[in-house]
Amino acid sequence: MKQLCAVVVTLPLLFVGAPAEAQFDSVGALDFQTSGSPQAQEHFLRGVAILHSFGWKQAIVEFQAAQRIEPDFAMAYWGESLCYNHPLFNEQDGESPRQVLARLAPTRTERLAKAPTEREKGFLEAVEILWGEGEWRDNRVAYMEAMDRLYERYPDDDEVATFTAVATLSAARAMNDRSFRYEIRAGAIALKVFGKNPDHPGAPHYAIHAFDDPTHAPLALPSALRYAEIAPAVAHARHMPTHIFIQHGMWDYVSNHNQFAYEAARALWEPGDSVGDTVHPLDWGQYGDLQRGDYAKARIWIERLEMVARESDGQARAMSSQPLLNARYVVETEEWKTLPVRDDSSAHELLATGISAVKTDDLTTAEQAEAKLKTMAEGDSPANQIMYREVAALVRLARGQGDAAIALMDEAVEIVEGMRLPNGAANPVKPPYELYGEILLELDRPAEAVTRFETSLQRMQGRARSLLGLARAAARSGDRATAAEQYAKLLSNWQGHDDLPGYGEASRFVRQSNDQ
Image (spheres, rainbow, N blue to C red):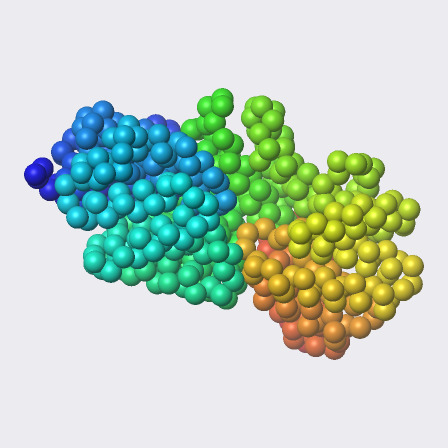
């Protein structure tokens, strides 16, 4: 039997501005015992560390390097097999992982025979289940169950634990479970490892995914702050902490870390690669800068996305994100822009156009956007159903039909309450509780508006438009203390952007309150 080799990967953190090739040294620290030779193990450990940060392309290079050094090193094939499907998305490329395993040996029995320890056999058996024939969602659940069994046998093994955590998150997505019980379990496992090794790349990463909602996000803030420093060589690792920073309204962090993630992704990208790691930080970075009131930087994100779309040879991820970022810019800045309603208009474009048309008294175009959204709402997308009701409510409000507008917004918030709790940038780009509050203000019902804005901020902490709405509603309700508090938070968001509409209003109110 081969000698067990325990090697710890502990690589120095480099400054963010270092060249991409130098930053490859910064992937975190872990201890993963295997039977591989020391030379193969070095590449294997590096591959695992990068895999924990979802750096698929980089991890494949390392696992294949380990395979070249030691062609029968079963765990190197195990690791590579996990690099072709995102565990938390509904990707279904079973063929590539099966081809990887077939390179180790043609049959499952022969492959397992190449894993010399029971623990390694357990890892390999789990991916044999994951990449076996059968329905993809069922396989993900069965994979979690296999990892659970391995975790029961090795409860103090950090790598068994972290891969069990991400398998549990994957199964929760596959089952569309809304109870959060799987996320809580995965997060608890990840935090246990994080407590033992705060430099482990997988532990804080999976804790962030597990607690990525307004209720549980505080549990993951220490993980997010640490993970922001652990693996700067991997674009996704630079982006991932912003899932929790968004939940806390930490907009400078959201902007800066997505800037870093974009730079890392651009440094790694080559023609033909997926642009996912590039587009994702463009999307979230723009959202952060819009909340900060940095509208010039928000336009730069759009320009970057247009460049990426041109270079990507029409990849759907890049093309579909363009109308989203354009619509978000209009809605967040309130620089109203009415576009023609086309057959191929996206739902978010129609929402932005519908709102803009109402605000500029072009009800004909607003009604066209409403009609198009109504057709889209007949599908199974809750977001489309909400956006239709938002535009329809604004059209009714403009026509003096306040009760009809309120009824439509009641339907919209009922739909949103059945959705997953907010994570990431607002979806739809105009949150329904926020719009509901604005409609109530127009109907001179400020006390009711206060409750809607408060709910919006409970769901999405620190949103600029919700802060402004709550401040105005509280002021009109006679609650000057709450109004001053919310205006002050808005000024903190918009620090350095005193030219924005609303900034002077907030500044005057806070100054007058301080003088009293």
